[in-house]
Image (cartoon, rainbow, N blue to C red; front, side, top):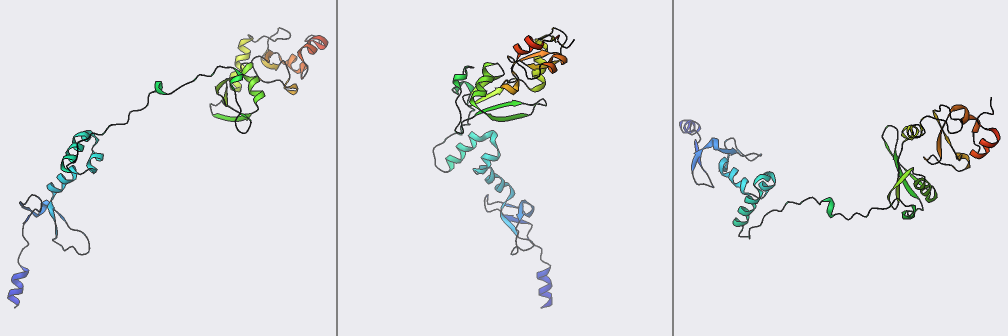
Length: 234
């Protein structure tokens, strides 16, 4: 009894196995081990590694993993399933020429308010960060007419200058010359003061020296030039 048990324990497991797919005897190293609680120590899969790999390549999932030969693999799979061969057509990006574009003229009449009754105004700060703001239609029309903004679409306008860009533009345009006294100027003054409805636009702003800017304050241009004048402080 003990001798028979000793003989059964000493028997070694077979070194080869019959593949369930190709029906060939192959070494056990060619088969994957079974996993799970019910799998024994020497349990192996039914198909060898080569057959499992070939089956994976022919599966439709391999078409997604290997996009190089997509067309050939799709035709091969369809032949196996007795289906008509078809090819995968890649989605082409839509060209810009196909998109309808209707350029809006820089005419304030093209503006229309949103449902909230406002116009969107966008621009950039001195550091290049974007900002958005809702404004009245009247202000948007004024900014367009006085060349401070352009129309993007019928609901949106865009400011042309940031604060630093606008100041540099006015000073260089007026050649750093005060509009009131003709001396050197490095500040910006509003022809129609902001307190009376003026806006910061190229039409309403001029270069001014510091003395004229402080002396004019919120006066109208014709009142300042007539009554006080730039030389009244002397």
